[in-house]
Image 1 (cartoon, rainbow over the protein chains, first blue to last red):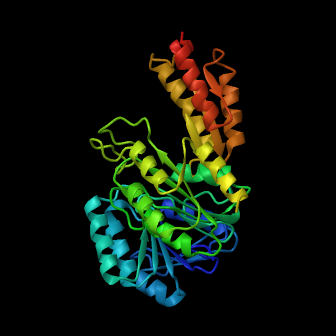
Image 2: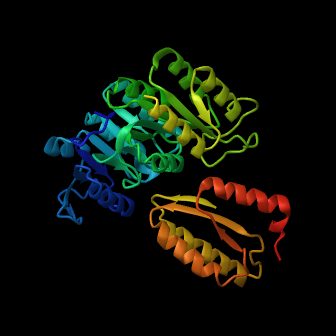
Image 3: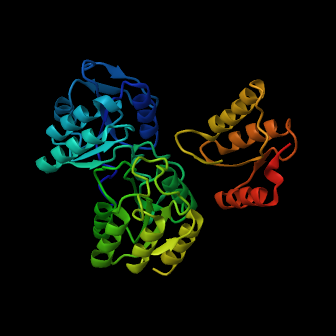
Length: 295
Length: 88
């Protein structure tokens, strides 16, 4: 099962003809993802060559690509200035899952395309500014390294790409159902709560790792959600215990404002909801090991 | 420096450290503080090799390679606390 992404997912790459799009399409193909084509306006009819006899057709529009290929996922490697238009096009084409890798998308653009997708009600957006989603061994959409872990019982949701990789690697012997990098921008599509709800329903997922960081109140809201709705064990890590107030730490959304958004407050809220919180990524992995051993 | 090589592989990071060292040397502002490095993930072995070869050409302790993120944090804290990080 896993969540949202399976071995049967048919994936379009918006921006496949660009250098990043091309490089990561090759990586996704190599890790087993079923890529069905690319979209670049004005380059329809071209073919992009890939190793492994996996050449890909390019279409002018997402609508045309969906009609010809039956794609049900689109991953966006379009530069920031074109990202909003690219997402709107995918939403209009009715693509159920749109993964926005692009960094530096204006917050106002994200607000607009996310609201647009919500109004249409048929598209889930992951990102922007995220590493994507991987269901190990089956499909990989985005830029997450595929060969550092394997299939297994743990679900992971994270704001941080690198901490996702760290935990995937530390727990590689146990393995993961799905890993979702939701991104660290102030406004994002899919949230911790969306992922927790999906993992709770997914029979393959037995336990969940949640990685948060300073800024906003997503972790506090996730804690409240866990308290009410999640019966599977959850282990968490919150990055930024030593972060100074008022300084953006890497991600635009990662900032402690006054007394709100601190790592300590998030840890406290999660622990109050019965979540075990590690002090370091390695300790978090150890806690998850104990949880899985006791299942 | 703590890197889990994903998209940016470890050999690229190691070469980046090497080039930064050389650039700063040429600019007359050489690196004086020890650097603790943990590299894991994509092309980690190649990155280790590049760093180890380069470190062998420097004063001992200039680049200290450790295996895990926890070790790196511990080592950097030790260097800072004991003043070994004062440099030449």
